[in-house]
Amino acid sequence: MFHRLIRTLDLHDGLRLPVRIGRHELLLLHESGETWLVQRRCPHGDFPLERASLRDGVLRCPGHGLEFSLHSGRCRAQPAYCLKRYMLEFDGPWLGVNLDPAGGH
Image (tube, rainbow, N blue to C red; front, side):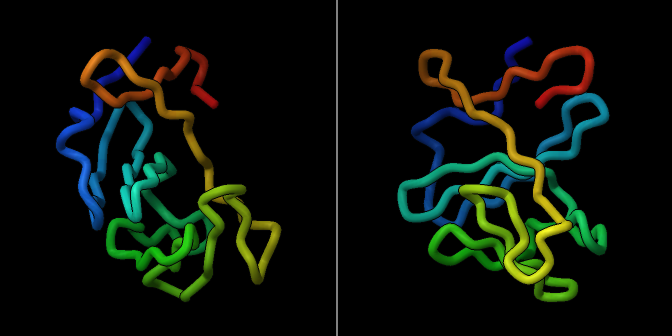
């Protein structure tokens, strides 16, 4: 099922939009013309990532400073930790995500 997140014309650099869809806590990020949808909390320390810094496609957790590539989801320093990423889809003017009932991607 497609879940609307934001209208594409509302995207702007610096966007950090926490979203809850059922049991999924997600974070929509937009920076330098790129948009990502990831799990909202750090897989290492459970810190909320909306306060994370983002530079050159790398998200730095505000808790312990671990850095995650938004292109692969992998933690640079500790590859055992991986940030769950979700594929974004478009529906007219809307940007959203399609989560299947079994738990998504």
